[in-house]
Amino acid sequence: MARMTLAIHPQLFTIHSLAPDSIVPSAIFQQDIYFIGKTSEELSVVVISTFEMDSLEQENGWRCLEVLGPLGFSMTGILSSVSGALAAEKISIFAISTFDTDYILVKKDTLAEATKALKKKNYQIIEHQSR
Image 1 (tube, rainbow, N blue to C red):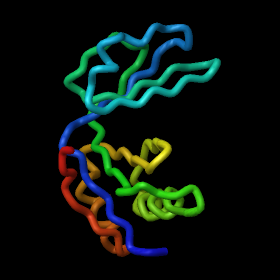
Image 2: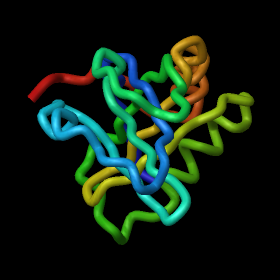
Image 3: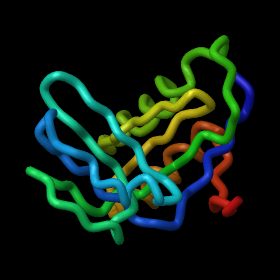
């Protein structure tokens, strides 16, 4: 696999859990970055922590590593490789994939350890540049 670059987003993120029939606040769609996932059993929202919303549960203090892409669908094993490197160091993740790339969230207190583990596996780690 070619050397991959991951960019660390500067913001803190919060993962919210809501009932599957909940209405997503319309203001969320004005945020620079957010992720929404829904199944018949739950609705999950990941958003920058400064955005406040009511939820059943929330998990604060996540940092985001973005695999710089776009990544083609023919590229395999990227998320597995990143998550494997972090699992070997006992670092929990919350993974999100989009059409173009993957995002790996780690707790803020494990970011330095996560970065070190990924660098050992030949990943390049940079600070995220706003677009």
